[in-house]
Amino acid sequence: MSKQLIERLINAKTNQSGMIESGIKGIQLFRITDSIRCAPAVYEPSVTAILNGNKEAICDGKKHLYDHQRYICCTMSMPIEAGTPTSSKDNPLLGVYITLDTKLMTELVLELQSTLGTMHMPKQQPSQGLSSAQWDNKFTDALYRLLLLVDSPTDLAILSKSRLRELYYAILQGQSGASFKRAFGVGNEVARSIEYLSAHLSEAITIEDMAEYSGMSRAVFHRKFKQATNMSPIQFVKAMRLNNAAMKIAQGTHVNVAAMDVGYVSSSQFSREFKRMYGTSPKQWGKSTQ
Image 1 (tube, rainbow, N blue to C red):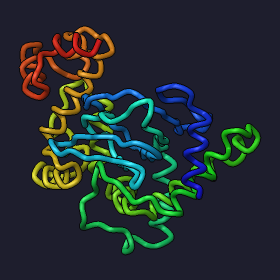
Image 2 (spheres, rainbow, N blue to C red; image 1 turned 90 degrees about the horizontal axis):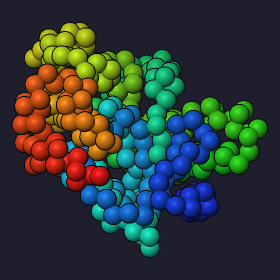
Image 3 (cartoon, helix red, strand yellow; image 1 turned 135 degrees about the vertical axis):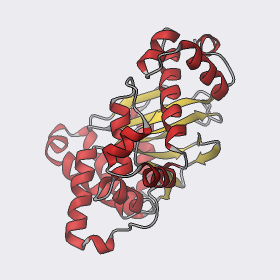
Image 4 (cartoon, rainbow, N blue to C red; image 1 turned 180 degrees about the vertical axis):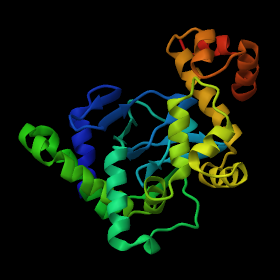
């Protein structure tokens, strides 16, 4: 029942296509009525819950389709291509986008580790940067209880953090909970290395730098990184840079400026790698997105 109530709430709050702020920190409601082809994007640590329609994502060449049966979980910054190819006014994409408060999630995971003991926390299986989880009653009820706060400023001020914590706890108990525990708990070296990369994208960060920052040898770092992201560190760094550049160019940034902003010194190398990944030159890409 709560799921239908969440959809009703989104319908009441969204009058036109786009994302709107709910009034709760990190929580946005969305209605997408346009068919949008997959385009480069960077997913930040987040959860996306779809109530109607479906969303397409391409990660490392693999296509994923998400709908109202499973919510999307991203435990670390990930370069992907995303779109809404089937959205229309008659069949809009409706949902909730939850930008994770990484400090709150880390505190909760560490508290869990402390309460349960690290023996209960999965270590051997790789943490997945992008996954999905089955909607269950705990997640649905926690999300609905959180969204109920949007119409009461007093309740929002007093209860939002505790209900957000309740939602995070429901996520940790869901099918993707193990990946969140690994990404935000003890031993989250890969997630921290990606956070480090994201903060220094314009600099000449090497794989050795990321491995050293993670406290691992290059070989061990390479293996654990590929387990977590399904990409080698070199592939991941290139995808992060090119996706960020593509997003900047689509927003009107000059090609050469976008290239420098994401760490490229050579404009010719940037153009060559951009065309190899997206099948079009950066200038053509900019024109096609205007």
